[in-house]
Length: 363
Image 1: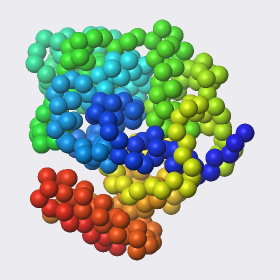
Image 2: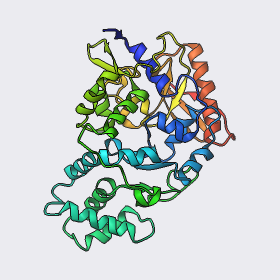
Image 3: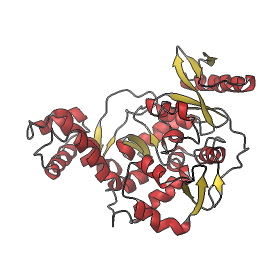
């Protein structure tokens, strides 16, 4: 079985994640290719798409959100993600048990004695009878029936787990401000989430495996599980295994992939890329060594924005008074420093609508 080293795996990730060459894709097509984008920080997906799409205009993501082509919702790992409308409907029910388990695990004591089916029904009723509502509004209404449960527990469980909802604009728009307003997924998109036909073996589960590999492969089953937070996909992997090709990594793990998916030569040049907090390229794996050294892996979960140099996390970045400030994590050659500053200036111009284009390497 062919062994793929770290550099080969990194180049495959960059190709799948549209980070080797900026792509000519629409926002919905790019979000679909990426298998969604983590989006609990509302403006981060804009930077992620700027790094991936040629000539990206923030208004195109705004239009996709207001036009209901993409939505923001709790999904993989119980984290707010930006996903296409089609994927929201196909994947939400597949993640339902995981969402419920993760929230209930946090608030088990507060929810003792609460019938979760009754709570879900009441939450759905409240969301269907009024204009989009905040989590706090829903929780206050639920407190009338379950006063001992606590407002935070009731709101979190209903909005992020029990009832399929989406977060509505202006939340998530380029210049939009405002708190989270929730609406039923079915009301916003005009369709119900597709129900699984059989745990782990339904078409939605099998498609999820294929889609993950198209966006992140070659990858191990542990990487798939880490990305989506689901434990019940072994049967789906088994069902599609005959369609896949196998490799090994340098640790001996089996990696699966789609036969025709891009696996560029390890020597393929990789341009500097500035990535947003919690980017797919880092969080799509259990083993993140293909893009980040072990000594720096903490930045992948700390919310640091990172800079890729030659395909690896080599710096973090922030913005202060219109200037992109870059803090090195390793020594950079003069050519790499120049490339980082040049790309940072472009990013500064994008973030400030072209009024500033300064970038500095601070350490």
